[in-house]
Image (tube, one colour):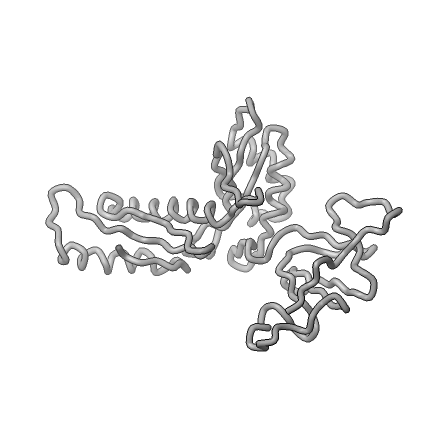
Length: 254
């Protein structure tokens, strides 16, 4: 398919609006679907893939489904705030992590912030934040959360926890690589559940990023003083299946 290189632009003499990428190109339309994803239609958008079976999720009735979360204001200016694949789904709430990150970045001691979904048996996902402090700053997590919460639109979007890191994982072009943070959050949650079930001494959690797809490997070992062999693994397997039943995660026993 021929996807557009650009969907919006600023007129040369027009005043800029902070946060906006401009107005739609002439003869083009940009709208926001019910799920918050921007859709584009116009002469700069191809009709779809030559293999029409691949159009689902990318093209719909002449519209290109961009995969970008955003909005269009009353003046027609386009704003992009994040990617649909990064949206955190907490029960009936669709949480845009970009909006939560903006609230955290308002704090004068925060250099970088990234928000991802942490798996949860009841809600599906819960928002958690990873933050890097500015050089020389001493961040207090509780104080940061209290300062950011009033700037977060809904209570469901307030991060469940904030983790301070010396740096965030980045892609080759310098963008935050969120799959690595989701992996870290997932390992932590499953590790907590294993500890709660009394299995942490016998099972280790190893998350693997397989091309952006997170897979958990539960490495079954044998605690000190216990017998080994296939019998031990067979005894662990039903316990692990019960523990993982509430998570919408790809996992395997190793």
